[in-house]
Length: 356
Image (spheres, helix red, strand yellow):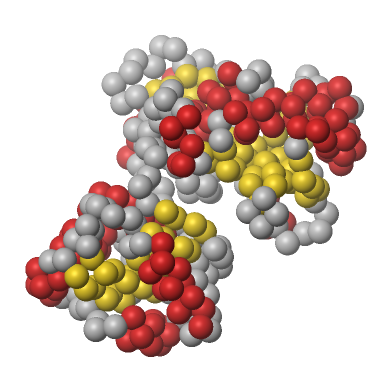
């Protein structure tokens, strides 16, 4: 479950982590509570907002209304915001990148930091000049020393921040907590300028207080390769794994594992399509459904809706079988969307259009 920036920052504030002063703006709010200059931020659950016009600095009242209207109507990776965040403009000396994330291979939490944060940090992802260490409660002191040394700050400045970030991460069953940028201000303080946070859907039973815009999903979506060329949609963990393995066996790169689960509906499947569109290099989407509780006609309706709502949707290679199969084929045919008889046929066709 991906939090909006203002939702993630509320959790930071609750754990005594410094964030910029800010207010939430809805479409019907008055603007009197906004102090200028301000940084207006579109609240959508995707990265790259700054590059796509979703973050603007407003200096005057004359600019404010126009900027707010523009951001509310701005589509960013198939999302438009329900709210905006208006924050104080911070005086910046340096910007860094700091994150905590779950490393599933080692069943550990990793602390990753890079000296130069901000919008271009992804260009440095292959650099060896970053900090990447395992972290847990027993090693917080030594981890804080390493982070302070790496960022070249006094330990007294860094340790409280790291302790509180770790507490926020673990208390909220997070899988990712990313601060970019972590700002070192002209006043000599560290402030979390932006925050991306993802929570474990499976932990929702422990958190009756969760009430975020993004609701816990009934789909099982796992990112496998951000540079993958083939996205997959299937139902049932076994079939989903078999589909991913079949893609790899054909010497193609699976980008994700996705089990839409039993009883999936048009809305939940459409969300899965939108998540797939966040991958940058998808050449094709392979859909492999053996319907039982999940009905083929529901999957068909979601496919049709995705074609209507999502620009530049990659080619779809669809195999359906089971409950309401005939109805699904008829629905798709009416929209000039073809289905295939087998997964092998889908993969062979997908191979023809893939670039990697």
